[in-house]
Image (cartoon, one colour):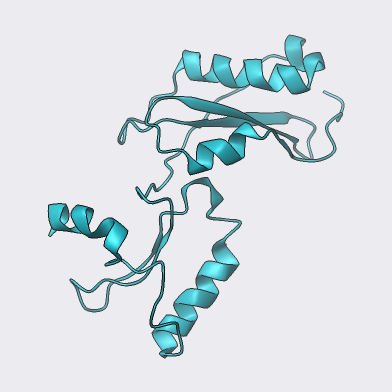
Length: 155
């Protein structure tokens, strides 16, 4: 397929989905071409545990959203579909720092779909905390007030 999409394109639903607490299926358009000329479309979120099955209804919903942005994709066949897990934290903030329940355990997780984009900032925060130069009022700590009810569940 000739390359026709020159940049990664997101619709505004992506930002809304990242901030949403909804557990049901949410789909937003994320469309980009690869160097080989294929087109990647996404994305979806649905809280359903560790069920790794790819569902036709989800792929169809993502394709329908992508077609709103790029109608010329309507005759392009699907080559493959893949999925992944998004580490989710109920207050929508990542968990970065030491775990007070187990010495030596450090966390850098819970970024949902933004982990790669936030990796450098996360590394900087984690480095500062390990070196003892980090913020004592780290808003991403494991034992923050907004996660207290969930810590009791796993303790």
